[in-house]
Length: 271
DNA sequence: AGGGTGACCTGTCGGC
DNA sequence: TGCCGACAGGTCACCC
Image (cartoon, rainbow, N blue to C red; front, side, top):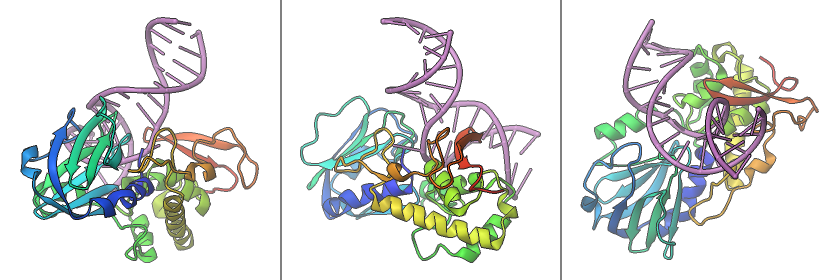
């Protein structure tokens, strides 16, 4: 479910409320992608200093150590004082002095992992190879263009891999490539500097606008307050195969790349 | 070494 | 109505 915009929107919806709270109790449901990495009771009494985001991970800074939270494909967080009783797909609950944080994740591709610090082995394994943050100043056009030159793969795959730039998932990869006029099948290394620059701008634009719209709610995403996103309403290509391109009227096509769907306009986008 | 593939898990939807 | 396969917002471990 969640790409960078959904994760960031989630963070913004509760980070200020959980900051400076103290952990009262921890409840685990079914196993997630990785084990927590410490006995749940070890977290009790610790203070949540704040919540940052790195790529699609939320980093909960504690007074000692941090929690890494990933929403996988189907995860969402809720934070409130009056949540309904936990259901079968609620697999992690953090009761704090300012509210209850709950992870709902039917497919359980998500994870909650404790690490003593960002240099701890598990934290390095998960965060160590992540690329540039697309909405931060570090997202440099020249570095981006150089990175593309070095990859022998389709541009769509390079965006999804997250080693060059993080946070671009299956929806926003198709959308950014449309905005840049580049087909998902184009070879990354073959893009001119001008087209690389256009893609750099498109990634920033698309993700930034999606955050402003509250993310995309395709089936069930909502932020920690339960609010849905609206960016899906302005999708130009994602999920629109067979429909008319909003720019030129051509029929939007869908192809499979690496067992994922890609959507593009044959006319507006070129290899 | 980098790039492709399978695996993880549950729910939903379309077709027969 | 029921069954079955395909597919869904991610990404790691493994193979060549």
